[in-house]
Amino acid sequence: MKKLFVIALVLGFGFKVQAQNAENKLENKSEPITGVWSLAAVENINPDGSKTLPYGNDPNGLLIFDTSGRYAIQILKAIRPKVAAGDKNKATPEENAALVQGNNSHFGRYSVDETNRTITFQVEHAFYPNWEGTVQVRSYTMKDNELKYIVTQTTNGGAVTAVVVWRKK
Image 1 (cartoon, rainbow, N blue to C red):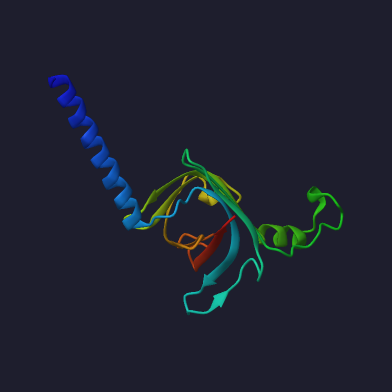
Image 2 (cartoon, rainbow, N blue to C red; image 1 turned 90 degrees about the vertical axis):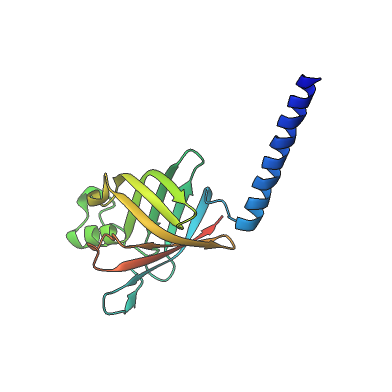
């Protein structure tokens, strides 16, 4: 009889905890960050308040957050010049500059702090090697399958702040 009472007590407690967890999820209404996201916009805000679109009006990009804490980001300017020689090793200095300035990619590990609304990126490798081995914290908002975050440690040496917008695929 004691054994049945203990089992009933444990099960009852378990159901109560599950009910509380479900209630908390409903209250938080947090959307999962994991999955595949497509780039909607990148806007740089300059120190004087002016704004530029470093990857053009319709940038291309892909952001993947997996459930094990890994991420990968690729951002490309929609319109980039082709390399006239048909060989990236024979690109002109101007072509190389356009290719470098039209690309941003990195991958590594991530964590999300839902309380403070931050994403922390631990950059393992990056197209911009100055970011490799860095930890970058970005404040974010997420609503209706749209993720928006602020980059303060930009590839412009921190001279601008970038607002990056992704949409869930």
